[in-house]
Length: 103
Image 1 (spheres, rainbow, N blue to C red):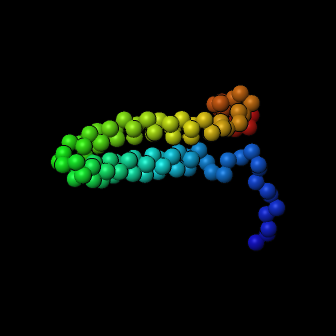
Image 2: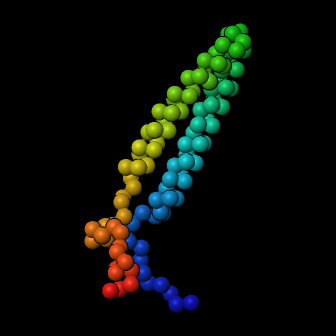
């Protein structure tokens, strides 16, 4: 193998846009799971503590939905703002038939 002396561009993202959004999806999924599990177990613990059988568990689970949505929006907004658009190819987004053949 011939060693490759090409150094990565410092302005280039370490992964592609598709990978970035897969990471964001994983973050959102794990965060939502943690919020819901925290609401369920926290509600069960509080219900046992105060003797309010299902009331606090149901309230915390219902409150976890809007919290999860707000945090999902915040994470997605942060991810989209950090993505840089690909460079423009001289204003020609769709090559014509002559451009494809080299004419």
